[in-house]
Length: 206
Length: 218
Image 1 (cartoon, rainbow over the protein chains, first blue to last red):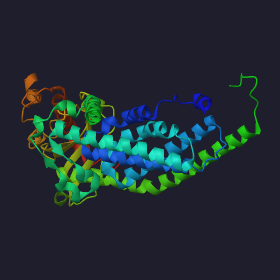
Image 2: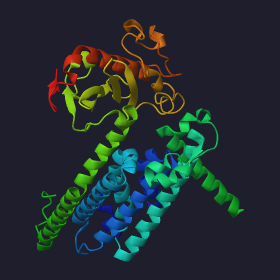
Image 3: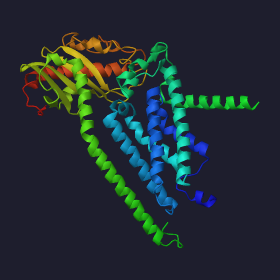
Image 4: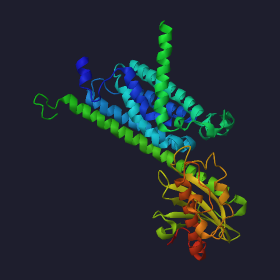
């Protein structure tokens, strides 16, 4: 098993590190809650969908060909999703359009690590994707509140007109901390989030 | 890999390659079907999107023609400051010219071109200016969206004589238009592009409404 892992075309890393790396391509769109939510959902669908489709690949396919086939499947699912978003959710597509293709790298890192039985692969992919989704949403909340002083801004663009009332302005927008909105803010927020999680864990251990 | 002596092309590899080709073909079929199924809808969305914005500048009551079809193309780098073809939407009522809306571009935005809609009535007065797409810095260059949301409406009613041509600039350059706190380049680019649209309007006034739909004005 160990040898097999080392011949894999993608460098192997522990699953939690992979999940962390998988987060990076999507970080840029975590600037508001609706954006983070939509990107997270798209990522979940792609991760679970492509793992399920990859389950029909013959088990004897060797690692290199298997990876090429998997890459094909993931890119196809991502392209399909962005076509559908463009046609039926134009508002979402406008805010996420150029970031959707990045989900390919993101998901390849998640599903690559788990080429075991189809059901186990599905469970692992779903778990990791859910972790990424949760982190995205948390970052979205934090960044929107800090950067723009609001919650669920522009949600009607994404979910339709009924969502217009969801937008709450907590304080004046120009009081917002610009760093929260700009891309570097995503990394700083992510660092703070992990520091917080570690701190809570250590408190529990005592 | 071919250099490795112990690796011959086994039967499994050929079957594997065939499987890969099958996956590729299946993907291509799925995507081309989906592309066909979404194409018309995507096109309709795009038209709807631009129509909503055109209607904000020239209300539907003020015109009775099909504004999306009644267009001409402007190619005039020296007047408009961009080599891109610029779409001109023409609004008419009962056959009489009402206004033109130029889908123009401010090429010198801080982080790339800024796409604008500039609506000009037959007298050469501005009916309004809308920003369609931009990549300006959030919080600084995009203040016309939030902090300075009364900035774009100030163009309404202005023309090449109001203010006089040399004061068609931001205040820092001796003009009449405010810049944003912490961002001068974006407002400067927009003011310049609007002024150019007006100059184009003045220069081409005689052909703007008579040019055949789809034809090019140079």
